[in-house]
Length: 233
Image 1 (tube, rainbow, N blue to C red):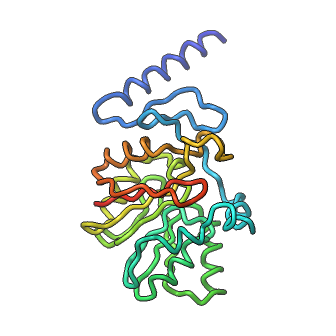
Image 2 (tube, rainbow, N blue to C red):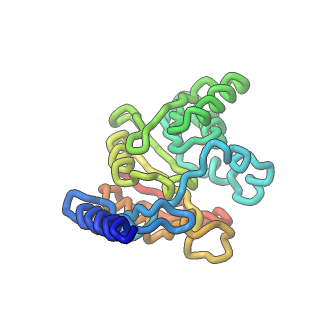
Image 3 (cartoon, one colour):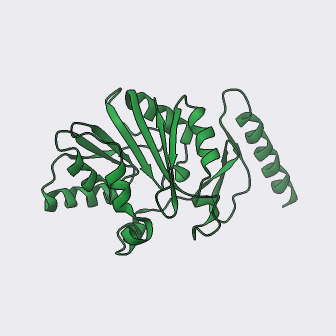
């Protein structure tokens, strides 16, 4: 069996070298407990929380713990904005944000059909018709080009298996001057009770967004556990 170990090591080395070429964005290593073994700009990408985690997104204490109400109120929105909720999950944010853009629309983007079915049912029951469930892929949110005033990603960017491709596609979807808002648990704060790979530092977020040509606008820490980091196209 030794030859298999040697072969596996050789393949891993070859993959890493290939990823280090000027056109490659990723490296590969042995996965950690909570990661997929794919490295982007020094950060291991975490496992995805699947649709079976819907209950966690909808837990009753979420607003109190994370002050999601503050986030919804303080997103820089105008009534006519086209907004994209990337990794929308159950639509927890999509629907209250849609109420803030009554003349606009919210693209609720997710790659999991189970989540989109949840959003469709929520849309039917709520009567809020300016939410548009949108099936994305791991590398593309499949949004119209230059059409989005503001995109936001809540606690999901760190799970993207293709962050560079997804980031570039998001930039293409933003209008000139459009905003991308990333909300991530603060890696700098050891008191935030979240697994390491499911947190991101401000420095890491800014480095990755600079790589796709976005301009940092500001970082806000009004939430108890998360950064709110705003970028402009």
